[in-house]
Image 1: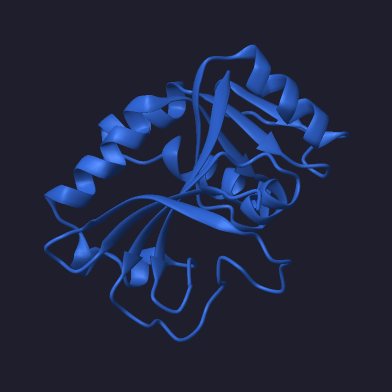
Image 2 (image 1 turned 30 degrees about the vertical axis):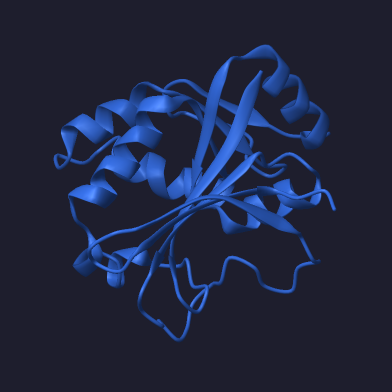
Length: 181
């Protein structure tokens, strides 16, 4: 049975938007190893429509980061969307209609990790529907001040911390699972 695992670069004030504008000064080998391990464990990627549109446009045309581009282009991808009619990116399936039932079925059909990176709206929806298995946060020691936060106007979701680690840069590597208290 598959697990849905979501990973975010996140600031101390909860911002997950545009990490390319604030996260790179904290990148080091420790963080690289965590990101690479997540990519290596992925048998599939899950994303929302907006992230799909951004990533498919970038990873199919970039000349940079060819190893990462190949991994993203080759892996199975599932896009949660009731508005996306067609997905042209290699190995992509659109999940629509009764998305919760479709994802439960998908989790039962495949073995391994279904990784997510980004898609805050989708993660909030997955939590609300009991479909997210792990939430991995790389908490950066910076207050960004503005931008989309991971949890905005959401119901309460109890989480249990299962692993924690502090990098030399002050970044916290935290893994949470839903806590059914």
